[in-house]
Amino acid sequence: MSTPLILSIVEYLFAPMALRSILARNLRSLRAERQMSQEALASKASIDRTYVSALERERYAVSIDTLEKLADALGVPAAELLRL
Image (cartoon, rainbow, N blue to C red):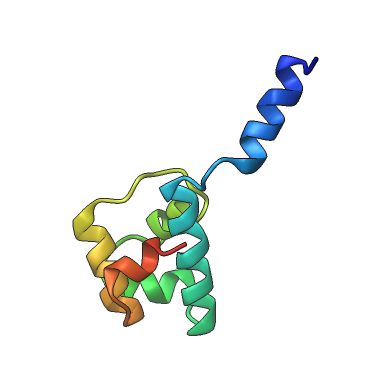
């Protein structure tokens, strides 16, 4: 018989990625591919650098408007930021 802790760990390991995690991973990856600092991306997207940092650390949920600004600044469709 499995304990609740083991079941929780298994559920966590096999759970689908949360959208915040997907966004954070893709944002970091695309920014790094373009050799952009958080500050450069924030400036190009007209948002604060600390907000880019918070998104990459999954601290905040992003609005649709900001998602579009980030995508434009990175030169990708907005959907690319949420792609698995």
